[in-house]
Length: 396
Ligand SMILES: Cc1cc2nc3c(=O)[nH]c(=O)nc-3n(C[C@H](O)[C@H](O)[C@H](O)COP(=O)(O)O)c2cc1C
Image 1 (cartoon, protein in one colour):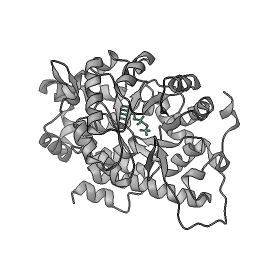
Image 2: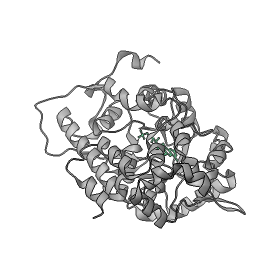
Image 3: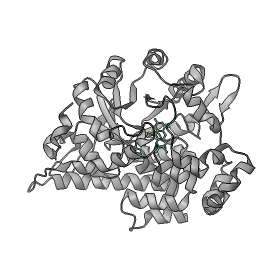
Image 4: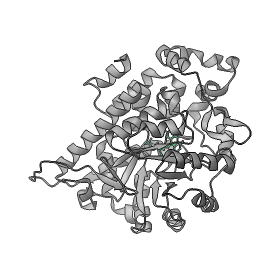
């Protein structure tokens, strides 16, 4: 057992906030803030988490049941848990195991993993690591040629769905990254890295594992025709050149015949458009508060989307999930399942696969306990009758 996996096994690590603190201690400030931070004033980032407090429970007491059923179905896949692991770019910077470790932990827990285009590991290795379904999140980085090659590799490797993120026409400005030298860390010269060395040297275990892993790899799943894998440093500029539009959806559907999830929906209008474009699911999401600041929290946007979609497609949701009770609230409001981003990524940064595993187990135990306290025997039975929702939430 490594020191970091010992620390996550400690009985004093009881919730996701404890993992956040462990992650902060293990990785340099630039990496931690890249993971933890949001865009501009971080208004949406904070609100994503706070908003769950606006929903209160309506428990049914004096009922008993032997087992709690946490299972659900997403895109036809039977999942043991009503949450999936969200795409988190640059996961390999947090821990060398990165996307492979997270996918393996998801598979062992009986749930799905969504691999970001901005992955440090080859998509074939990520798929092979998991015994569960793995979805591929698509950015059009490097243009249609590179994207088409990535989609074809995902198909051959056995990925089950394509998740098209539409909220990233340019990268949001995450101010902490600028202050901490994230750009210099992933791509700068030794001279440019110099001012940021103290924070890196203060995390010798992370530094040793990072160097043994070969430093910053280029993106193995974004292969530019005639040039090779895209260097990490090019990502921000490349994102700005490759915004996904609704018209791209048509050729994406021609290239990818499996189910498509549209991620980054915040309004009823965009949700209906996604349904018209043939989406098998939408994910109500503001990218974890990392793109346009001051958009509503995902939970607040959920009722409008549920109403607009009117049962025509599956609804997922992500943003601010830090406890099982948060997941229960989102499901009561109409999400079929949620995606967790930072909740597992803090675990990854703290202790690799062992950290992701423990973060998932914490959320699983939370879910089981919350359902029992609510007097509800299964995820499938959750609905609005288990929560009080502020009256003005249904106004739109
Ligand atoms: C460090 C980090 C990197 C992310 N990278 C991606 C990405 O490459 N593609 C994407 O669609 N979403 C990305 N997201 C957004 C997540 O998929 C998800 O929407 C968000 O994390 C949900 O909020 P939460 O972290 O509060 O759970 C990223 C989020 C974080 C925290």
